[in-house]
Image 1 (cartoon, rainbow, N blue to C red):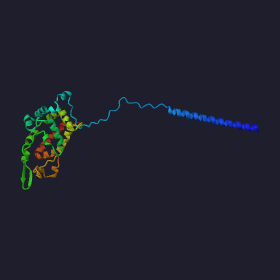
Image 2: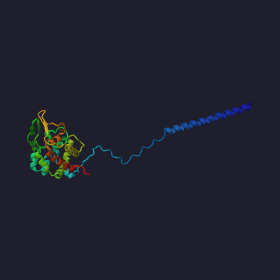
Image 3: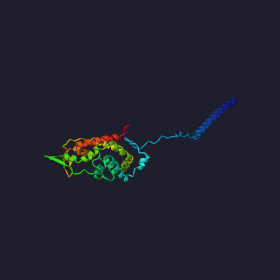
Image 4: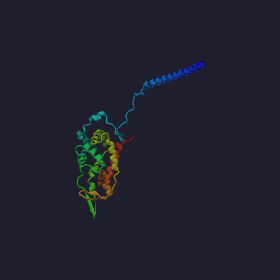
Length: 271
């Protein structure tokens, strides 16, 4: 009887001991796992490239770049505010001294050219910013019955300007433009277009002018107020530049457009 009880007591002690060993092992494993999880070394940062990629450019893409002036040529240019003499002499070398004196305004030549080019596709061009002198005389009209129209005499008012344009050596004019281009670019940026490229704007404006319709005479007018307007609402709604070409008459308009096409070919990207 006692012997049986002693055997059972011994078995229970062995079971308790086994449970204690298992519990101690589990506790030890748990403590080891906690220690490893909280003392694991941080992963090293990813390697830094020795040559990081360049930042994306914020400069607008230039569609029609001109050859860049070398440093010596750029240094030889006067300041924009002092450029009238150089601009006038350079243009006179192409158009002739007499034509320049008759047609060109003597001051702020580069600035006025840039401002006028920029405004030609708009509704109005400020008279005080035009680089050429006003066309002599008033608008000449012809009246037949109840119809008032531009007369041939009005087209003849533009003859001196058109003659000078037709006689222009376009390649020589393009060379002058490229040589003075830093002045044109600075003037364009001063006008409120930092980072924009004036030659692209010039090409855009030429393309706009070339889209003006050639209207055969007679070109009817109305006079709702002091100034005459085109009777055709489509013509009256066009830009200042296109309306000027129409006002010159169809023959003069064709002559101006022909020279604009020639000049455009000299300043566009030919790639």
